[in-house]
Image (spheres, rainbow, N blue to C red):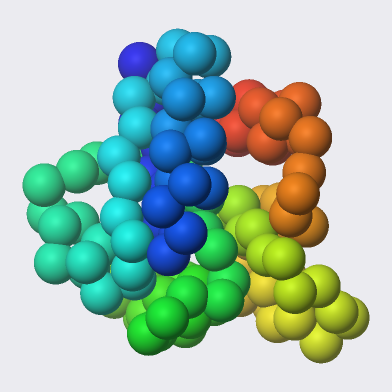
Length: 117
């Protein structure tokens, strides 16, 4: 079973994605902030991060850069409700495998996760 870590500061978004991914057979761990994930990262071995870009503290893009600097190479799918070309470019420059604009179709998310080798 693949483990997907979801980081979003919106509790209803976390709950919805948790239900969706669990229904598709994934083990899901949720965090409400990048900082909480960094504290708990030793306790999980994610196969993929589903990461909101605009979080209350450290942004999703900053978290991805920090993980890369620490030598932690995880596939990242960024999601955001605030879409613009600059944000999209920063997300791809940080190394994401997919970029989803909220609200997104569940099929797009499942396809992005299933596309990970």
